[in-house]
Image 1: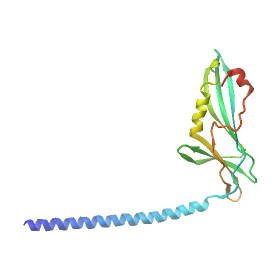
Image 2: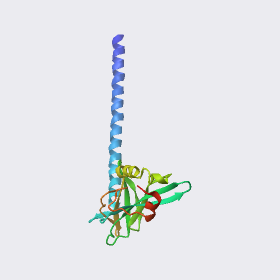
Image 3: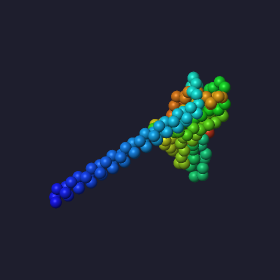
Image 4: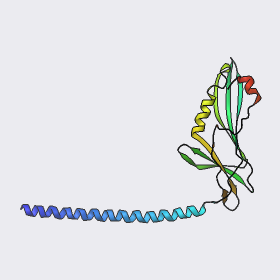
Length: 187
């Protein structure tokens, strides 16, 4: 009787192994076919991608400008703006900017027609005697973590190569409003 039970158990195990093998084979064949479909879809997406032409956008200039507003009781509210401008690109209809983070490049692109991009890079409200408190520290954090690059959008589904990445807060030249020294006294 023990031999009959052992044979029966072996037979059931063999059936289970066969069943799992078939299931595994089906999974693999499904995975391969979905992989082929994904490759075909990927090929279609790639063919809709714009043609990239040389040269890249050049002449990038980044500046910082400070705006200070005096408040009651010897307080100030200040903001530092970072602006990135570039030279006109021949036959460009528009320009696209891409955010570049420490983690990688953003898939979202920002499209615009003008050749300058401006954003608030730092701000604070503090005592007038403290000047632009922590400005340099805030700008340093942005320089490490955040940048932008730009490319030109042309006719016939083509774009220029990307420009170099410019770090937010970094400058090629500083532009300051006159009221900053008067209102804040120091950086």
